[in-house]
Image (tube, rainbow, N blue to C red):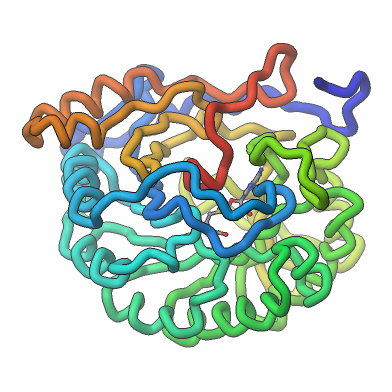
Length: 364
Ligand code: SAM
């Protein structure tokens, strides 16, 4: 149920990108029915996670969906790449729990995007718990960048969120190992919940400046596992800390300077401080939806395509693979599915329906 007077206001979505894609031959590139080029594939390589973050999970250990042999992911990814995918983000669940991940990255690193002269951009989103040992091998295998999810910069608050004791030191060691391995610039993502970790905003600014990482604040979306378990949080608009409030708080800490977006599909508004030290991104899918520039598609750990985080439907690509369909048939299926990509999400609107899967089981 929506509260009658939400604290956040929802801005209209940005218009679709109408830029010029003329640098390479675009014929055949994967596009949705709204004209958006689909260049970014996020793939969950396991449904398992070793954290039970209060805003994401119920606190129970259960796995909801299966994981597939790495070769099956690789085959599906190669078909996506042949259609125009230029960026792969490996996620989960917790991707560092997946055996064979380093070899998978090495395999991916040999793929070439069909519609770009650049090499395939391979990124990873992780909670960082196991990153200290894996950062250097992943970099050597061909991983380009890492994003670490970290929702507090003090150990007690962090353990309260993850529900895993002494987890903060491990994640900090992982962030430093990633930076030292050359997986930078390391991004640190923080989901803010009012009254829970929003006291950390200024401390995260310090953290960015001190540790030489990009800190990105993300508005909490209605994507949590359904639960009445103790300690778990259920989404409400009042709990979202909107972009304007974060900007105000940071400006009071030290004046912010706008940075230009890296690309039209950039989801974050970027800032540095008046002395140029530190970088902050703010991702505001709730108060400032950016669906008009969406270039993403997701593949779940059990091999289903999701065309939007908020979809009500999964499309079973892996099922087609198991039926023995050829690469051409699978490519045709992907094109067909992408034509159903939603124009935008409807968070905050009357009649909004939660998606058919929660974030941890989609792959964020
Ligand atoms: N285990 C990995 C990790 O922690 O980064 C990958 C999966 S996790 C689901 C991916 C990201 O989704 C994390 O940064 C997490 O904070 C974010 N996330 C989870 N639930 C969310 C929600 N309801 N709204 C916004 N972000 C969410």
